[in-house]
Length: 149
Image (cartoon, rainbow, N blue to C red; front, side, top):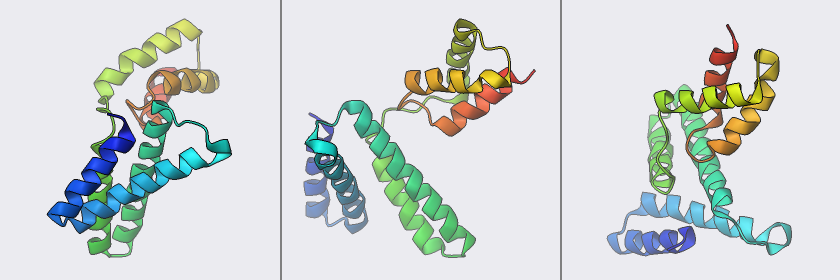
């Protein structure tokens, strides 16, 4: 079952259970996927593209929640975080920091990176290898640590 089918099934379940907030998050995911399929010539959306779309939606909701918290609007922040949690259920399991470090060390040694000036080269390889398994912000922090002696 592909992601679109899973989303459609979850939308039906949420409608039957009358879960308004969950339904809103699922419809946002469906809209983003449909937009991606119809844009740029209507090409097929790959699994990697779907993961990137979901990660973008989660990131947007977390950033929006942060803004709401700064403005003392915790009710709106909670709604955004709830939606981010719903969307995250469709993402593959994220690696923790300890699991990412060996991947980055391997990339650094294979690319011959010697300092912070090689961060772009390491980030390109790491982002590709860890796509969907870790966010780039975490990866960048680890790369900086390992390249800065």
